[in-house]
Image 1: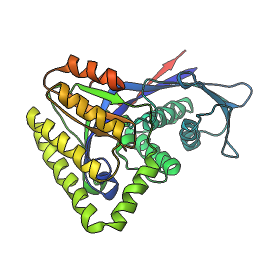
Image 2 (image 1 turned 90 degrees about the vertical axis):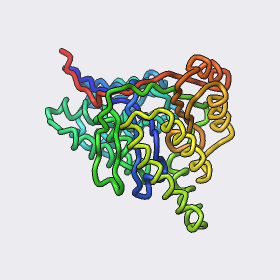
Image 3 (image 1 turned 45 degrees about the vertical axis):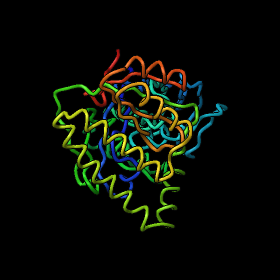
Length: 321
């Protein structure tokens, strides 16, 4: 028996970094996914193959170790931690495909984590609710990253458009009857989420009277964005995205490469463009009213680009004979 689970990537529309301080955020699931297939390993080993990333190796369940010669094996830490939530350590083969730029602020680790927990729990005949999958996945991200909001894992679990309330008191699915097609531009430089979060905290500790108002402004902007999204006010969505980018720049998470892509997009068409995710490299998100092809062409000259739409489906599980 083989189990296949998949979970979507995500892009934060509003509220990144402020969400770490209990502020609200809005994120959308993207129609780019991570796929995890699991089946029995008769040698009683846990073997993982992430072909897209040229990562192969064994997971030492008892000693919490990763045995791999692959130079970029950090994603395996999420896989190992996920397995330990729902597996007894018996032999397992895992084949993982990732249709998401790694380390680009698009929730690749959350998608892999959610899909791994879903696939391995189903393999072990453990029926988890969506709430339990999201909870376990957030615990994994906290364990690996040391600091993480529940936003990424929630979006990967449930899909759709998510509003995370202040202090993460509730997760609200924003019901809209229109699509939000976006363009994602991403760099070869990858930001380290943990270090970037720590950098913002250090800056806040040093200049609280300056940085706290910036974080509070992101909160108010996100609350306003919720209302304009529900009313489908495209012009205001664009305006608020551009303001949000400026506030993230003030927090110190922008880079020359990201800024270049942001302004390349704005100069090519009528659009909102901003960092999405932790920053320090990674990705921008662009929402445009016109000039889509021109924006895509311009971004291709600057760096990498992909189109994306909302994925209304979150984690999915199937059984193969």
